[in-house]
Length: 639
Ligand code: C2E
Ligand code: MG
Ligand code: MG
Image (cartoon, rainbow, N blue to C red; front, side, top):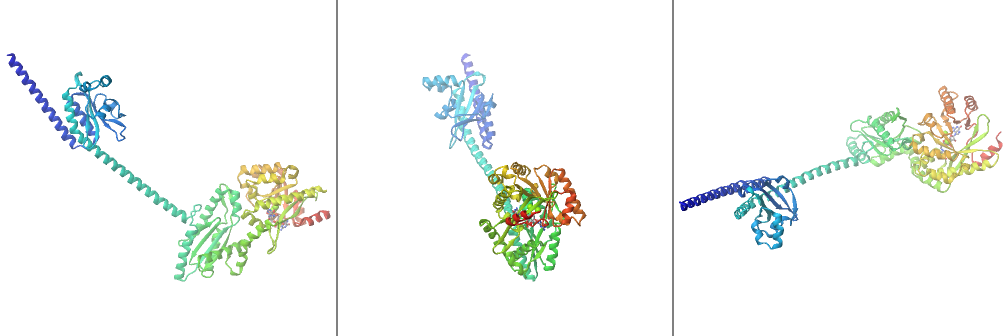
């Protein structure tokens, strides 16, 4: 019976283990088919770890794989207890049991301990607990391993578990290796795609910036008008067409008057804004097929296809009219005028450069003769050719000290005493004869020579004023100082060098035009304060012709106001002018300013000024500007 029963139990055991075997084989087979068709790496890790767990009945299964850097391994997948905490973790290659397996390329399980020497045995015994770890050897590379941790029910992993897991590992390793390869291909595809996209955006950017470059190379950024290159291109096309059609072209060169002063007074930002506004007004006059371009600075050019002399001059007038209304830039009202030079295809030239240079010389003729518009006249061209050499001549005059100062007396209207003199620049050129200061001062300003000239004028006037004051009279000398020089960063230093102290300063007055008050306020204030500190008087010249208001002047250390001669000249016959002079005198007196009338030519004018309470008079009635010696004689004989 006992034999039978033991036989029976053997049969039962055998059956159970056969069934188990069957289940295991089924599991392996199923795993094999499942992951064989799976390429998603994460999903494979999931399947592998779950099946392995079932197979060896482990609480936890983990899949540590070697990283590409060959310095670390990472738990890439897992199933069972606490895997969330471990999966994703990276450790150094030689760390823990994994490190041992990587090194020996053989599986780890409890049984291995027996084969270790005592020292290693001691170390691992404490560290490993119940664990089985088999290597994952791919076809090409060593991948890492599969680890089972803690057998369900607290038992130890058996040799059989180890064998099963090893078999399992050998089946899945190839699938894992393939999936890794697929993933890396996918990754690199993705990377490629990203590169391609980046390349595409780069290409797009490149096209855009080359478009922008093309725009920049053809258009002016301040006004958005065509620039010189595009103008050349358009004009040359127009010329080709006009030749074919036997028609004419009108070319207009528009140059703004005194724009440099305006720009300096306004500051460049507002100056640019003004240019933009001007360009817009001109643009309104342009019809299809016509070109308005900015050549640079304050120069515009207009190409009018199918135009003859009459049409072109008519159109030029319309462009002029666009400037009739003043411009308002940030609440400042600015009057702008321009001189227009006109040349015609084909009568004045058949090529771009001759047409342009002829329009240019016509423009100069307009400027010098105070004309709005001037048509190119071959007779006049020698005059304008002189312009370039003028700059050279003036440079030479400065170097060779050809300039002189003449002095014009200013008298106190109440006492008739000569109290001051205005120093006015004079130049007699060897080749040109007398050149008006209105012209040479402008050339000096436009060619960066005005500072040098002004320092010379201040120095010369100071020497003269000291001479006069050492005699019986106290005569202050007024020097005209260009805004450009006054606002120059080096001005204060140079003044310090020339004037030195109040003892000298009190002999001088600086005449500045009122446009200076549009300059940057803080800087202007600093300069004017310094002038004041040196005891130098400050006079606002040509008051009434520019852009300022008495309320603005009030805030600055100004001592004197010179009413422009245009008001004084007409004052006796023009009630408006008289009213302006009267109210200006009153207002200025209220502000504690001395009032000077310039351009006093008649006794009648002087009497009216006396009546209006004006303090000082200057003009031909008293004396024209005189060379020093004549001025001395004048002083002697005065009274
Ligand atoms: P400004 O400073 O307003 O000088 C007065 C101008 O009016 C002078 O012309 C003077 O000769 C002229 N004038 C004086 N009294 C009368 C008169 O009764 N009737 C008429 N019709 N004119 C009179 P000028 O000497 O030709 O100088 C012209 C302008 O040139 C000056 O105007 C001034 O702005 C500028 N200028 C002259 N010398 C210098 C200088 O050394 N430096 C600077 N920056 N500008 C100067
Ligand atoms: Mg003056
Ligand atoms: Mg003046």
